[in-house]
Length: 295
Image 1 (cartoon, rainbow, N blue to C red):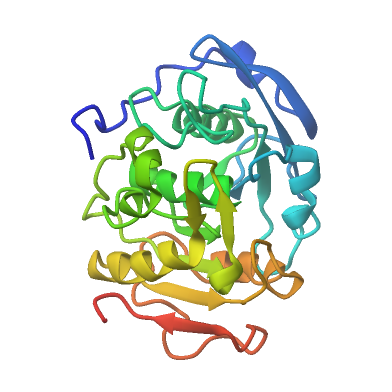
Image 2: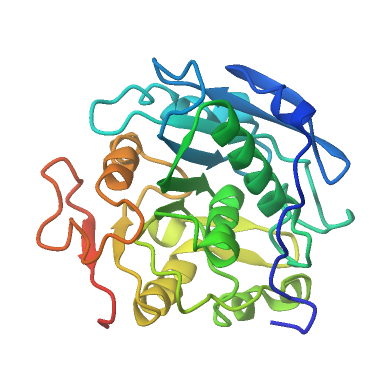
């Protein structure tokens, strides 16, 4: 990473008026560092008063998508028996090559404090905790494509707060091997290192050799990112569930039902992984467990 890729800084206190906006449905004008943000909030039955201990799942949409379209990926599972949870689906600020900060919908390329998505994560999590209560050992993030890269970035910036990460066609740009595949586009990228102490398990899914997106000046090949990131994560002490679904750049239906069971099996600090001995019967045959430390 370049020298300006510094660690993030703590979120300042949140004004109570921001937290008062929280209610099921679309939340708008939620102020973070003076800028309005919006997100969809999906609540399980029983989330009606402060004092609970609710798991929270953040879900981040891909480039050109929106929260309303992406939210149904997990919204129907908030009342699942294994782990009812509060779902937060943010809307991007539609960043691009000519914006400040530069990004692919999200602030996930040149990581200079304050990172706007990490600050949103902090602010929403704090307000959800005030409004309904959060189980701090069960905070998770998932995303697709640009949103998956952002989920991976949260692992770098907020890994101490995350119990597990799920990325569909993502990539860690803290891994020097990934930006090097992007030619001139690598000049836009600067991440801090992956902290050694943040050892969460990761569900890492990708769509084989056809899983790619043109960035104009380069092509992002998510199978290459996965091939780079699996040994990178394992060497850093992370268990990985690898799922090469060979269905190009998408989230297959068979995989959509596996994310929440993966999260439910992995509270923060759970080692060794509950899935280390064998993957659950419902997991597709193209998934495999890769233990931390192995090759």
